[in-house]
Length: 89
Image 1 (cartoon, one colour):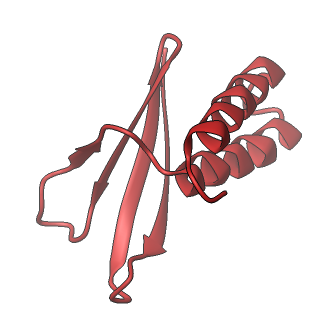
Image 2 (cartoon, one colour; image 1 turned 90 degrees about the vertical axis):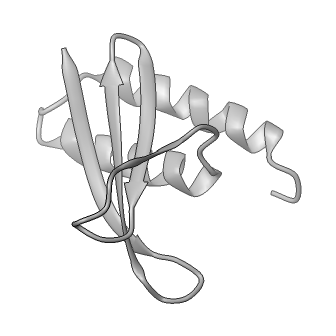
């Protein structure tokens, strides 16, 4: 089953960026775009902030019984790995 979650954030220049994370099987893929008319751009190595935002969304979905706890645990593990890899965090 494919599960898609999305949010908006601002870049360094203050422009709005749309970010989507979708899951197919056990693989999460992140995409982003800065304007509705632009194509979605894949994010090959998502920053820690993307994993944190995704974990927050999944925690809120879990509280409403809209996702499984194993999904939350899986993303927490990915976040832990991203924190180990990212320098200065």
